[in-house]
Image 1 (cartoon, rainbow, N blue to C red):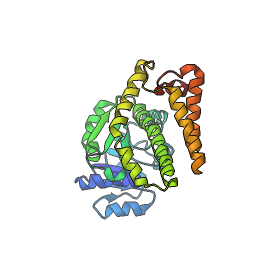
Image 2: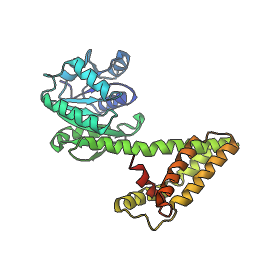
Image 3: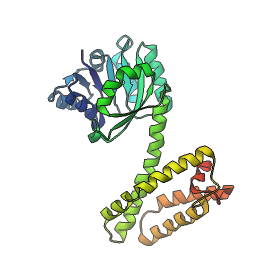
Length: 289
């Protein structure tokens, strides 16, 4: 028996398997494209020919596929009704809270144990000090799986027994990063249109990191406490500034899609009567459909 089986060998799955092999664990791997499994086989992993063989090879199974639908198809193909008995399936695939809770029920109905996690790291950070995993599920199951998980990410955050909570945190963070990536790219387009060095823009934004950290903490506290009435900046003032980005985009002949979208949200918040409240009061119009 292997210490762990890793199912799904995309960039992240391969990084997970490599970190475990490098740590001295016996690792069985499976991937629909066998070439990726063979690359890991060359550094000491054991290649399974089928999903069922991978599942049978270990009591700890790590799944890292493209989505939960792919996981369901694979498990159905493997005919795992008997194979999952007494095993721990750790789902590290991206998905929704609803999907996580459904898969937990499915696994437990077949005699298995389940943890659901979200990786907060790039593939090349796996196994290193920067890697983090948020994990949810039964604490007794986590206690058994923790030594394996900490080889992948020393920063392991347990968020409780509700397996949907790891995916809530991941997807909430993804919404933040989506705006971060788009916002940076829009700013970079402004720099480039003016013939300025985008690398300098990156350095300038990196220097603002402490301010961003403080603002994020402040917004979390303000929203939790419903305290928006003592603003450093208001919905109205921020909305005016963002509308100006639309004008600048036109002047520079770059896309205005991002500032137009952002300006529309602040306009909606102002029209809803929140114009004098602080900028994170935009939460009030986002939380309702």
